[in-house]
Length: 303
Length: 239
Image (cartoon, rainbow over all chains, first blue to last red; front, top):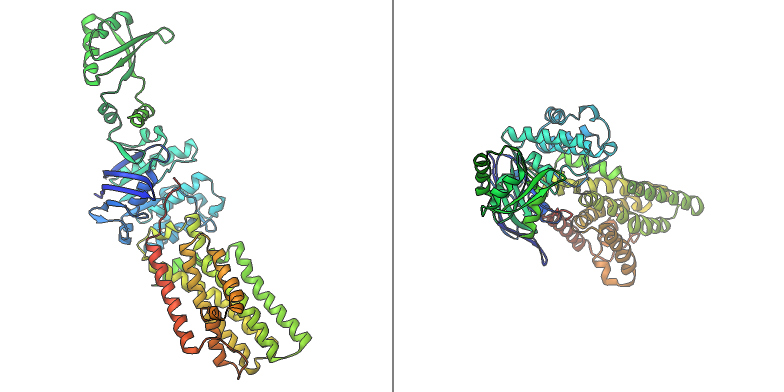
């Protein structure tokens, strides 16, 4: 059980505040650090990785400060966003060097290369690798000492869909093994697909935290949109609009469905099935039409 | 204090880069000059001293020091690959010390060895001139490596600053402003050469005790400070 604790941490560069009074706890499992470009995700990860001092507040690993503490790297594996990685070495030489710097050797390097399925190209120079291959060798270098914490900065950038799926699978496995895995992304679907827990950073502030759908539901003052198909759309619409939890209903003739805007999430979710049963209407489709991170995001940014 | 893996990576990075060509070109040039001078002017102590002092010590050694010293760390900081060294349970001063050893070794091999060969070619080590300048090159290699390694750690423009120091400060200012010569690695190393060479063959503007102290202080202080700077090196993202 390894936990990174960020406590009332800010970081500024001159007059620019990159991270503003953020507190969060990152524990075992896969956590997604989500936010638009320039939100402060990299700054936050750099502080968790010990590459940047917090201006105020503390960043600790199981209670030990991370900044200026080289011993934490026995626990932490880092997959940086930047591409620079000793291109003149072969993949194997690179991972072996990383192992040696941990006081380990060829066996651990070979195991790490096997984990990321890069054995087939391990004797080629890194300069000849594709983006996805580089990413996997970076992963191997971060995993070589079997760390309990894995920090990845925008790991899916520039990967093709197949490579992306492979890496997601690997990270899921790492999380399931009880490691603390944190990755940053500005791509909503990546976080949605992979992370069990999400931390949202917007403009340097910690905008939301928790399970994706919970985050969505927390924002009860925001309208929730649903697409509903039933055996009698107009009768259902009439019954629903009578309740204050519903703000608006549109009959979408092209979709042959109702577009419902609910303002009280909890109440609406119990109201809909109740009304349908009372009216003898069969519900055919109930789908939240904006339960994507994109919409959560735009709400958070606007808030 | 010395990490063989860091050393291996540094050697390969240093000698595998295109910039490394200068490491071979400058010594080759010195040897060519030495052979040409010997052929046309014959063996002459004064000429030998002029060539070794004017080109080997004044130009070649500092330039090779700039390439090796800044090249031992600067490119890794620039492209971000230093992160693979920093994210390890290896102390930052160990990383700096190891890179210093590599830079010193490379500078010595590419500057002191050709200086000795050129000196032997020029006058067959008459008046100990070849050995004296070789000692100067060895000593200067240590101080230049430490100085330029620090520069590579603290500045993204380390090569330019290093060249400015080596060419403008040591060569130009040194010849115009006598005081500048007191603060010159070149003069400090010549102070050692002065003691080794025959009477009056080599002169330095700095006395030997002061030169020794300054060489030691600069080397130790630059290395210590580079280690401190690396401990707080900010690898901020590109946001």
